[in-house]
Image (cartoon, rainbow, N blue to C red; front, side, top):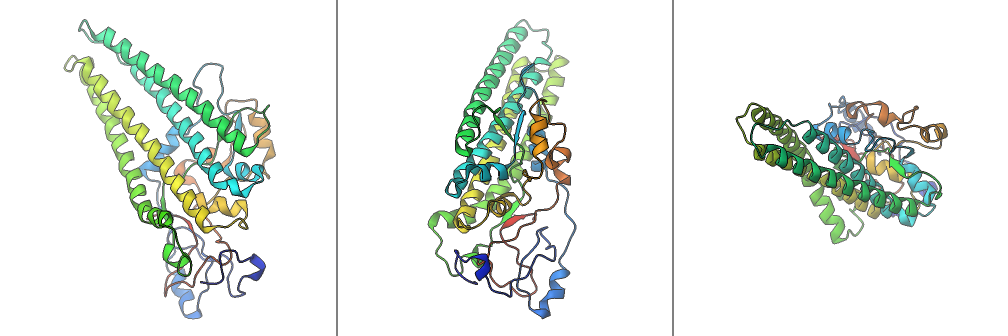
Length: 358
């Protein structure tokens, strides 16, 4: 390993290269390439794969929507990079990042609860006498869940406002950067070759692959539960299943959706912990954000987006991630901080910390 964690950019070895080749995992590597392996590293480039089920599901859950008539939720778009830079305190970066993902999870939960109410309101009561009473109870419970999700969102937003130090007169923030749902390459062995890693950092490094697998399998479970609900509802409409079967299918779908949202939040919180252990306070906020999600949305170059969005439910000049589906988001690009990259193994590009695609 070249240098110590607190090595400044001007002290970095002169042999560190600038970003050139796109690695097979979609990241841009900053490596010290021996001449004999440079050509071999170029041969490992590959096109970006299609979006996974987890990315597609997350995209649906984070789409702009209106929970109540006349009440907008997306007046104040807040990129992750803006949240980090506005605080002016790099010691708060972990708290801010986790609060940011908490607000995102709260938005997704409110979206899921709102969809759950609409789903049940479309169920037609059957011929049985108790159908209408059971269905009314289900809808009332779903509306209660939606109200609770709305309250939780406001509390999470205020927590983020306090950490970021946003002006009190501004609308509550809407996080426009999406959390990561692809695999994350830690490069633990290279980064901690000559550094001491805490037990918590080692545990995160070991658990992240399983966390990512849980996201993908949970997304598949949500899809299966949605198909099961549609089938049960159709059977009930034809009088072949009781209303209780519809209630059970709805509860299972809701449970899987909420577990998926929580899995995404935990996964990204652990990535933030890992990055905080790797990057010291000399690492700029934009580089820190890139280590979390690969391509954070810029904000200083787009002040008009935030100003215009303050008068509309959906900002008219949408940010890149709003304009594109999850599959169209550019592959992550990350330049690792000086002193944190090691020489690459033979015939293999060695990117710094960055999201990767398995």
